[in-house]
Length: 148
Image 1 (cartoon, rainbow, N blue to C red):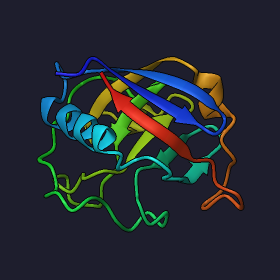
Image 2: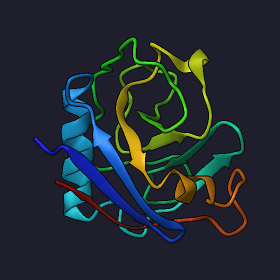
Image 3: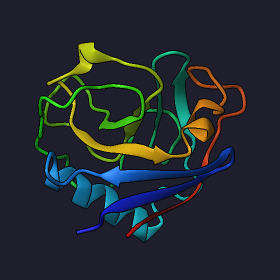
Image 4: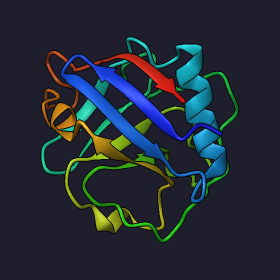
């Protein structure tokens, strides 16, 4: 199984340590989509200062995902703190698909309700530099994503 995810953003390089110990199914999905090129060119459609940056929707609207089936929740006690990567979902706990978010600050109120699958180990300044907005006027984007 892949150990790291490298995101090349238009704001810089980001390295994410994958956490299959917490969410093996979600890590497998993220790695599969990344290595298929699914995330290449996808924007961060929702970036809220002091909270999180969300991307992973190929339409850039926050309303879509991949053609793969939704994932069963893999909630853990891992805290949602700055740099943590977690899956976005609808109100249904088992609705995560391809969208994810990176915490820009601590968001402990999300603990045990969203699936944590990784943590930024390098390049958090590139995540911080993403344009803010819901959606941003000129959204930041993932130039390429590779899991190794």
